[in-house]
Image 1 (cartoon, rainbow, N blue to C red):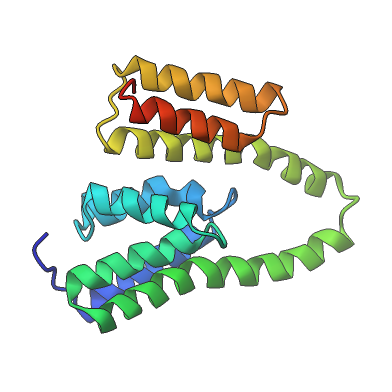
Image 2 (image 1 turned 90 degrees about the vertical axis):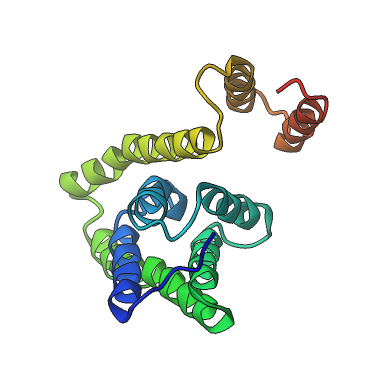
Length: 191
């Protein structure tokens, strides 16, 4: 990828976008990955599809909080824009943007909702977020699956995904067994 040139307004735009997404992170930061993809890859072209997917995959494989993929995306934007110092700037802007607004909001609303937990509106609000989180996570999975060339016509991969989801949902089989089986199926070239 050719180096990109980012001005101060671009860096501010990056921070502002992540700060806005922070307030939508109902299911965690990963639930806003589709919009991050739209902004970073499709609209601004600051990252490529492989860089975007690798940022999520590497951060999810590493121990620690799931939100670290945002820092890795900022790091990659910064690397594409120059070098170490711009990478650190991108890391700080993305991670700070995704963490700061939601942390402040949660701090104040947790106190308020705890004091008003018996109100019907508060209970309804909490129950209404379940379907929203599921939809956001499904859209994230769709973006990750289709951005790397996994077309809908690749039915064995989709079937394996569906069967794995049903096994996780309906049994107590440890997830590592499914990950190992998926690694073997991929290594054998069946998917």
